[in-house]
Image (cartoon, rainbow, N blue to C red):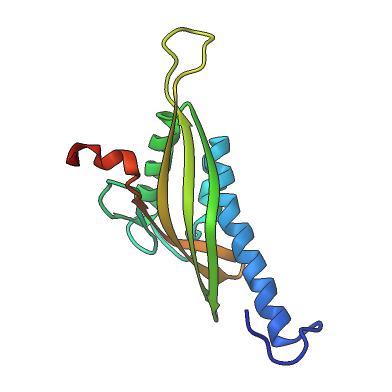
Length: 165
């Protein structure tokens, strides 16, 4: 971040940094809610019913999925993901934040570790890793920064192109 002058209390630079930190915290809440299987927390990260309805106002693209529009479809998608995932953990890298007025853009790489269903009760299922490049668009609301749009795109790893030999 480039700055002009000092970033003392109340300066534009300190306000921008406070916004960046608040956006990063909102972004982190999305991934923590997913890791914890907390649908209520996920709903709290997204724009509220005051800013988006069940048909419009928010969009979400999970890797390999079509565009989902509205709170109902987006919430349902996270519910389905959590119902069908035994374990999931996100390690975010390459996190970049840009704030422009009341809109903020976060790009990052989601390094995902997930686990499938165990073959036998009491055992751990297999762990699988993957990478997704994500773009999260936030809007400032009276309740703070809320997710407006999420788009995740899978990253092909070197092992994905082994058939070319």
